[in-house]
Length: 390
Image 1: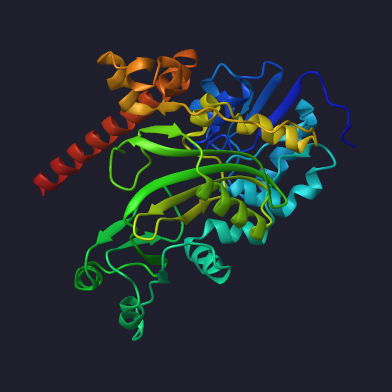
Image 2 (image 1 turned 180 degrees about the vertical axis):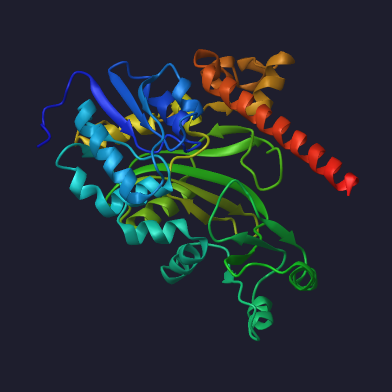
């Protein structure tokens, strides 16, 4: 049985190191010197393997659920793990189902019940659920190529977006000004049935990240973009943390109704027509701007470990700061724009500050990406030669 005594050194296991969010989670945990982090990954060459912050790395794990459960159990026993902290959707859902079996050996970071998770992870189930509970949300229908589709479409206010029911990063989202343009798109290119169609809200995006326990928000940050994303519908390159009562109220109402436990990142949008904040979607996992929340003063992974161990932590007031990531941070650095008095951003408020302290994961990722491009280029060249030879 797991001891209830809190250890001086905290041993944490990330069971899904292959997730793109695992490195930000690891870097947040590394802010606490007493934390030792172990990584499980399905990829033996996962860039997170090369982080100076990981204590042990275990690669070549199979992707199946049974194999993952076995690998978690073996690592917990071998490394005397205190807390299991899932990062992405697959591992979170798995522990939602089977976490009780592991809780005898290690504490599990808070996760939602499976029904709530499945609602949050599917954009259509989520849209249907918030409509039923009268939570502000844009009108949404499910794409179904049947005789009643055009009538259902007529009930939506245009312009509209089409979105995959699963996924993120703005992938697969398309914008249509008129019903005729949308119907022409379906006729010419077709569309899978697992898409939603949603009225576009004229206004601006504003997001909220949370850690919850049984429907109560334990910690949160609210953010709005101030540097445009690299492509439409992607996350902004620069964000500022602020307080918005409308966002706080609607998010608190949502997580209460869902009886949500664990972390989540919610996309919202301010509707300039009715001056109301509306929830767009809910991501039941860690998120890309996680280290931005850390810069603002909220270390969500560390707080999730506190919650797993039933440790109380005080209410945290995050700072109203700015954070810049990716290419935008590099451009600001090279142009000398990282000046707090001028832009509200200094070097420590960028993703570069975290990369400089722990550069190998990005170096390895860049090298592997370059090798893949070279391999594809060589393959295409050989294919072209074969085709020409015919």
